[in-house]
Length: 243
Length: 233
Image (cartoon, rainbow over all chains, first blue to last red):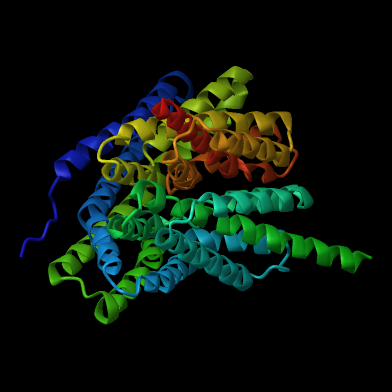
């Protein structure tokens, strides 16, 4: 048995160094010309940078030897099934589980709870978001199976979002569109996307470039729509209480 | 300051549930070969260790600096300096964003090198940099976020629906908008923005720190669409 663990790690190291270079140069300039921090502070920052460097390297190596090949393989296995539609409920489950536990989502829920003084409880937000993302991933898989253009999803999706936005207040608009990013956690981008790519490769007449990608776009839409909807409900109820 | 223990839990929560689900599916439906299963677990371990170290590093080293630079810039009193450095910062942060690397790596692989990894990372970083600058301008001039969002998305759809963008770039561009808001850019841009907002409007609440991330994900979409026009020629 041939298990790859450190294959290509040198290359990853090199790439991560290039990646952090602009940020380090930027800090250096600022330190010299403006901040002039004491040595102790600079030392702390240097340690932080080393941690970031190692962390990024391990993360990318894990994706490179683990999530990408295995995710693709799972996608290909499902592609050979007679019941390919099973990937739709599997996608739903993966999306739900990935969001339900995601720390960034919890931060968002606390924030909404606070802004609405508890009117939109954390639990409701959590379920709304998790189901929203689950549906997004299920839709992304459906798209691949039937070869539906991404337009039919993001066109109406953003149209509804922008229309709702016009009726929402500034705070909810900001939170909603900020939230677009929180649901795209580390597992969605690396592992679930790899499954979609592997799957779209095995189907006839599908271009993985067109059909496989687009999943993150759909996942990013889910929180925007959820938060705006809850925000409008909140506003409506508040108005009713005042009147 | 986030403790080591909190960071470890954060990563465990993000990764463990889905790993368990994959294991359940493995022994009911998928039946991967044993070697692949091990390979998956190697991935889980590496990604977890990586995320813990990464988040710690960002919190110890990078975030405080983001905030300090954010607070130091407005004191110069020069608008062009704030905008220029916001751009450079947005650019550098995106180049170091893990999710951006993963997505562009996948695009590179799936397109068999036709759309190279770095030829995607650079436009995405440029787009994000420009929009971080715009967000700062928005905070300084107190422009409503709604109008900026509305017009930006009109531009996005205007370009996306135009006949010059090749179809392959549409899904990638919207995906790129999602991945830029990853574990590096979000805390960094927020820290930077809060730093700037705290100096500019010490009298008001820092509610304007919100909306920074929203605008940040539009820039990359537009940038990749433009890349699509260039590739389409």
